[in-house]
Image (cartoon, rainbow, N blue to C red; front, side):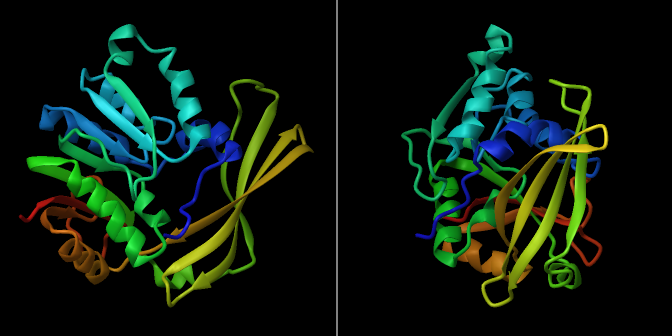
Length: 264
Protein backbone atom coordinates (compact mmCIF):
# COMPACT_ATOMS: atom_id res chain seq x y z
CA UNK A 1 0.00 0.00 0.00
CA UNK A 2 1.08 3.56 -0.58
CA UNK A 3 1.10 5.97 2.36
CA UNK A 4 -2.08 8.04 2.55
CA UNK A 5 -1.81 11.60 3.73
CA UNK A 6 -1.72 12.05 7.51
CA UNK A 7 -2.83 15.54 8.44
CA UNK A 8 -0.26 16.69 10.93
CA UNK A 9 -0.43 19.29 13.62
CA UNK A 10 -0.50 22.29 11.30
CA UNK A 11 -3.71 21.34 9.47
CA UNK A 12 -5.28 19.93 12.62
CA UNK A 13 -4.94 23.10 14.67
CA UNK A 14 -6.32 25.33 11.91
CA UNK A 15 -8.84 22.99 10.32
CA UNK A 16 -12.11 24.03 11.97
CA UNK A 17 -11.62 27.79 11.83
CA UNK A 18 -10.31 27.63 8.26
CA UNK A 19 -13.21 25.64 6.84
CA UNK A 20 -15.79 27.61 8.82
CA UNK A 21 -14.99 30.48 6.42
CA UNK A 22 -15.49 28.41 3.27
CA UNK A 23 -18.85 29.63 1.95
CA UNK A 24 -19.15 26.99 -0.78
CA UNK A 25 -18.77 24.11 1.68
CA UNK A 26 -22.37 22.89 1.80
CA UNK A 27 -22.05 19.26 2.82
CA UNK A 28 -22.90 19.47 6.53
CA UNK A 29 -26.69 19.74 6.21
CA UNK A 30 -26.69 16.98 3.57
CA UNK A 31 -24.92 14.45 5.82
CA UNK A 32 -26.86 15.41 8.96
CA UNK A 33 -30.16 15.02 7.10
CA UNK A 34 -28.96 11.68 5.76
CA UNK A 35 -28.16 10.43 9.27
CA UNK A 36 -31.52 11.61 10.61
CA UNK A 37 -33.41 9.90 7.79
CA UNK A 38 -31.40 6.72 8.31
CA UNK A 39 -32.49 6.52 11.93
CA UNK A 40 -29.70 4.20 13.09
CA UNK A 41 -26.05 4.34 14.10
CA UNK A 42 -23.43 5.75 11.74
CA UNK A 43 -19.82 4.93 10.90
CA UNK A 44 -17.78 7.86 9.59
CA UNK A 45 -14.52 6.94 7.89
CA UNK A 46 -11.88 9.69 8.05
CA UNK A 47 -13.81 11.75 10.60
CA UNK A 48 -11.04 14.29 11.22
CA UNK A 49 -11.87 16.88 13.87
CA UNK A 50 -15.56 15.97 13.90
CA UNK A 51 -16.88 18.71 11.62
CA UNK A 52 -19.59 16.31 10.43
CA UNK A 53 -19.50 13.80 13.30
CA UNK A 54 -20.43 16.16 16.14
CA UNK A 55 -23.50 17.74 14.50
CA UNK A 56 -24.79 14.21 13.80
CA UNK A 57 -24.27 13.22 17.44
CA UNK A 58 -26.10 16.39 18.55
CA UNK A 59 -29.16 15.00 16.76
CA UNK A 60 -29.19 12.08 19.21
CA UNK A 61 -27.55 9.66 16.76
CA UNK A 62 -24.84 7.20 17.76
CA UNK A 63 -21.74 7.62 15.59
CA UNK A 64 -18.29 6.01 15.47
CA UNK A 65 -15.44 7.92 13.83
CA UNK A 66 -12.22 6.51 12.38
CA UNK A 67 -9.18 8.54 11.36
CA UNK A 68 -5.49 7.90 10.74
CA UNK A 69 -4.39 11.30 12.11
CA UNK A 70 -3.80 11.48 15.84
CA UNK A 71 -3.59 15.31 15.76
CA UNK A 72 -7.04 15.46 14.18
CA UNK A 73 -8.47 13.00 16.70
CA UNK A 74 -6.89 15.00 19.55
CA UNK A 75 -8.77 18.09 18.38
CA UNK A 76 -11.97 16.04 18.23
CA UNK A 77 -11.44 14.80 21.78
CA UNK A 78 -10.90 18.38 22.99
CA UNK A 79 -14.17 19.40 21.36
CA UNK A 80 -15.99 16.39 22.79
CA UNK A 81 -15.04 17.43 26.33
CA UNK A 82 -17.02 20.63 25.77
CA UNK A 83 -20.15 18.78 24.67
CA UNK A 84 -23.08 17.74 26.85
CA UNK A 85 -22.83 14.31 28.46
CA UNK A 86 -25.66 12.98 26.27
CA UNK A 87 -23.68 13.90 23.14
CA UNK A 88 -20.38 12.53 24.44
CA UNK A 89 -21.97 9.17 25.16
CA UNK A 90 -23.10 8.85 21.53
CA UNK A 91 -19.56 9.24 20.13
CA UNK A 92 -16.74 6.72 19.92
CA UNK A 93 -13.54 6.92 17.89
CA UNK A 94 -10.74 4.73 16.60
CA UNK A 95 -7.28 5.57 15.33
CA UNK A 96 -7.06 3.59 12.11
CA UNK A 97 -6.39 3.56 8.39
CA UNK A 98 -9.55 3.45 6.30
CA UNK A 99 -7.87 1.00 3.92
CA UNK A 100 -7.42 -1.64 6.61
CA UNK A 101 -9.74 -0.77 9.52
CA UNK A 102 -11.99 -3.60 10.64
CA UNK A 103 -14.34 -3.85 13.60
CA UNK A 104 -16.94 -6.40 14.67
CA UNK A 105 -19.80 -3.97 14.07
CA UNK A 106 -22.03 -3.34 11.09
CA UNK A 107 -23.92 -0.11 10.45
CA UNK A 108 -27.02 0.90 8.51
CA UNK A 109 -25.11 3.98 7.30
CA UNK A 110 -21.42 4.47 6.48
CA UNK A 111 -20.26 7.92 5.35
CA UNK A 112 -16.99 9.26 3.94
CA UNK A 113 -17.58 13.03 3.76
CA UNK A 114 -15.40 15.77 2.27
CA UNK A 115 -13.25 13.74 -0.10
CA UNK A 116 -11.04 11.39 1.96
CA UNK A 117 -11.15 9.00 -0.98
CA UNK A 118 -9.13 11.60 -2.87
CA UNK A 119 -6.26 10.79 -0.51
CA UNK A 120 -6.16 7.27 -1.90
CA UNK A 121 -3.55 7.38 -4.65
CA UNK A 122 -3.61 3.93 -6.24
CA UNK A 123 -6.38 1.67 -7.47
CA UNK A 124 -5.35 -0.82 -4.77
CA UNK A 125 -5.81 1.77 -2.04
CA UNK A 126 -9.08 3.02 -3.52
CA UNK A 127 -10.45 -0.51 -3.63
CA UNK A 128 -9.25 -1.20 -0.08
CA UNK A 129 -11.00 1.91 1.30
CA UNK A 130 -14.29 1.03 -0.40
CA UNK A 131 -13.98 -2.56 0.80
CA UNK A 132 -13.65 -1.25 4.36
CA UNK A 133 -16.86 0.70 3.93
CA UNK A 134 -18.69 -2.26 2.36
CA UNK A 135 -17.43 -4.61 5.09
CA UNK A 136 -19.12 -2.50 7.77
CA UNK A 137 -22.50 -2.20 6.04
CA UNK A 138 -25.30 -4.20 7.54
CA UNK A 139 -27.72 -5.96 5.19
CA UNK A 140 -29.55 -3.28 3.25
CA UNK A 141 -27.19 -0.61 4.58
CA UNK A 142 -26.08 2.50 2.71
CA UNK A 143 -22.67 3.98 1.91
CA UNK A 144 -22.47 7.66 0.98
CA UNK A 145 -19.38 9.63 -0.08
CA UNK A 146 -18.40 12.61 -2.19
CA UNK A 147 -15.48 13.66 -4.39
CA UNK A 148 -15.08 16.77 -6.50
CA UNK A 149 -16.02 16.77 -10.17
CA UNK A 150 -12.67 17.33 -11.92
CA UNK A 151 -12.16 20.49 -13.96
CA UNK A 152 -9.25 19.45 -16.14
CA UNK A 153 -8.47 22.96 -17.39
CA UNK A 154 -7.99 24.10 -13.79
CA UNK A 155 -6.19 20.98 -12.59
CA UNK A 156 -3.44 21.25 -15.18
CA UNK A 157 -2.87 25.00 -15.04
CA UNK A 158 -0.92 27.44 -12.85
CA UNK A 159 1.64 24.94 -11.58
CA UNK A 160 4.12 26.78 -9.34
CA UNK A 161 1.78 29.71 -8.69
CA UNK A 162 0.60 30.64 -5.22
CA UNK A 163 -2.86 31.97 -4.43
CA UNK A 164 -4.88 32.93 -1.37
CA UNK A 165 -7.55 30.35 -0.49
CA UNK A 166 -8.89 31.21 2.96
CA UNK A 167 -8.57 33.96 5.55
CA UNK A 168 -9.83 34.11 9.14
CA UNK A 169 -9.33 35.75 12.53
CA UNK A 170 -8.39 33.15 15.18
CA UNK A 171 -10.65 33.05 18.21
CA UNK A 172 -7.60 32.78 20.45
CA UNK A 173 -6.20 36.16 19.34
CA UNK A 174 -8.47 38.63 17.56
CA UNK A 175 -5.52 40.92 16.82
CA UNK A 176 -4.19 38.44 14.25
CA UNK A 177 -5.26 37.28 10.82
CA UNK A 178 -4.34 33.89 9.33
CA UNK A 179 -4.26 33.42 5.58
CA UNK A 180 -3.98 30.03 3.91
CA UNK A 181 -2.34 29.98 0.52
CA UNK A 182 -2.08 27.07 -1.92
CA UNK A 183 0.80 26.48 -4.29
CA UNK A 184 0.35 23.69 -6.83
CA UNK A 185 3.61 21.81 -7.26
CA UNK A 186 2.94 19.15 -9.92
CA UNK A 187 0.24 17.28 -11.82
CA UNK A 188 0.45 13.57 -12.66
CA UNK A 189 -1.97 13.04 -15.56
CA UNK A 190 -1.28 9.31 -15.76
CA UNK A 191 -2.04 8.50 -12.12
CA UNK A 192 -4.63 11.28 -11.81
CA UNK A 193 -3.29 13.19 -8.84
CA UNK A 194 -1.64 16.49 -8.04
CA UNK A 195 0.70 17.72 -5.32
CA UNK A 196 0.59 21.10 -3.64
CA UNK A 197 1.73 22.99 -0.56
CA UNK A 198 -0.47 24.71 1.98
CA UNK A 199 1.16 27.87 3.37
CA UNK A 200 -0.32 29.25 6.58
CA UNK A 201 0.76 32.86 7.20
CA UNK A 202 -0.15 34.63 10.43
CA UNK A 203 -0.21 38.44 10.41
CA UNK A 204 -0.29 40.95 13.26
CA UNK A 205 -1.58 43.99 11.46
CA UNK A 206 0.47 44.06 8.26
CA UNK A 207 3.44 42.26 9.81
CA UNK A 208 4.03 38.58 9.02
CA UNK A 209 4.73 36.93 12.39
CA UNK A 210 4.60 33.23 11.48
CA UNK A 211 4.67 31.00 8.42
CA UNK A 212 3.93 27.27 8.43
CA UNK A 213 3.72 24.85 5.52
CA UNK A 214 2.23 21.44 4.91
CA UNK A 215 2.22 19.22 1.84
CA UNK A 216 -0.94 18.11 0.08
CA UNK A 217 -1.56 15.37 -2.45
CA UNK A 218 -4.95 14.58 -3.94
CA UNK A 219 -6.29 12.14 -6.49
CA UNK A 220 -9.12 12.95 -8.83
CA UNK A 221 -11.66 10.63 -10.41
CA UNK A 222 -13.62 10.34 -13.60
CA UNK A 223 -17.12 8.91 -13.50
CA UNK A 224 -16.19 5.67 -15.36
CA UNK A 225 -13.25 5.19 -12.96
CA UNK A 226 -15.62 5.30 -10.01
CA UNK A 227 -18.08 2.95 -11.69
CA UNK A 228 -15.23 0.46 -12.20
CA UNK A 229 -14.26 0.75 -8.52
CA UNK A 230 -17.84 -0.02 -7.53
CA UNK A 231 -17.81 -3.15 -9.67
CA UNK A 232 -14.52 -4.26 -8.10
CA UNK A 233 -15.86 -3.79 -4.57
CA UNK A 234 -19.36 -5.24 -4.99
CA UNK A 235 -21.20 -1.93 -4.70
CA UNK A 236 -24.03 -0.56 -6.77
CA UNK A 237 -25.42 2.93 -7.14
CA UNK A 238 -28.75 3.72 -5.50
CA UNK A 239 -28.62 7.47 -6.15
CA UNK A 240 -26.09 9.94 -7.52
CA UNK A 241 -25.96 13.75 -7.33
CA UNK A 242 -23.99 16.62 -8.76
CA UNK A 243 -24.35 18.84 -5.69
CA UNK A 244 -25.41 18.71 -2.06
CA UNK A 245 -28.74 20.16 -3.18
CA UNK A 246 -29.24 16.77 -4.90
CA UNK A 247 -29.10 18.19 -8.42
CA UNK A 248 -28.38 15.78 -11.29
CA UNK A 249 -24.89 14.43 -11.86
CA UNK A 250 -24.36 15.97 -15.29
CA UNK A 251 -22.05 18.38 -17.12
CA UNK A 252 -23.01 21.19 -14.73
CA UNK A 253 -22.01 19.22 -11.63
CA UNK A 254 -19.46 20.52 -9.15
CA UNK A 255 -19.44 17.36 -7.02
CA UNK A 256 -19.89 13.64 -7.51
CA UNK A 257 -21.97 12.29 -4.62
CA UNK A 258 -22.92 8.62 -4.48
CA UNK A 259 -25.42 6.65 -2.41
CA UNK A 260 -24.44 2.97 -2.65
CA UNK A 261 -25.39 -0.42 -1.34
CA UNK A 262 -23.78 -3.84 -1.50
CA UNK A 263 -24.75 -5.67 -4.66
CA UNK A 264 -24.44 -9.14 -3.11
